[in-house]
Length: 172
Image (cartoon, rainbow, N blue to C red; front, top):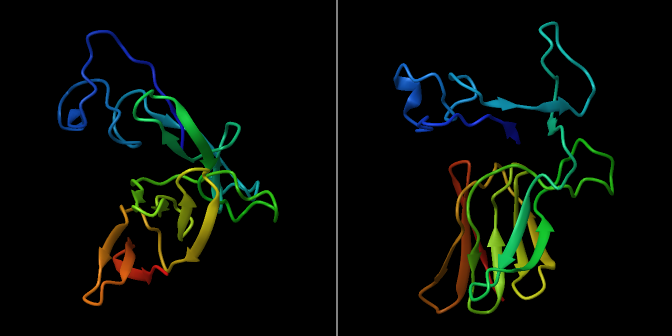
């Protein structure tokens, strides 16, 4: 989700600010200071306290999450693709990116594995083009970095922690 905050001169923006008398804190939506998240319910419905009902979407133009490949030698973006879907949107319009946090893992064979979304998916992309090659539905959100390992037989696997459940897939 996006947020708006006004940085004040000579102000520390420490994640520990909520434990001090400092007037500004960007560490918590419910904490002190100029940290405001703007979102709207996809349902268009609000409860009696004005809070959105159901899945929320940021109040700015998508993509709301992207996977980007950066050329380490030049710092330029090689490719960027929306990462994640919003299931509350109409079919065919769901690929708008989704919030989450974690990094991808890249294999020597040129696959980028990532689960850093809040849509309960684990995906593989081509490291050269950014084309999505594979997707698996998970039992929970996979906001963790994937791992890749070789089994005793030499077969390669990729695994992800999705809400405390480790799920592994064999590579062919």
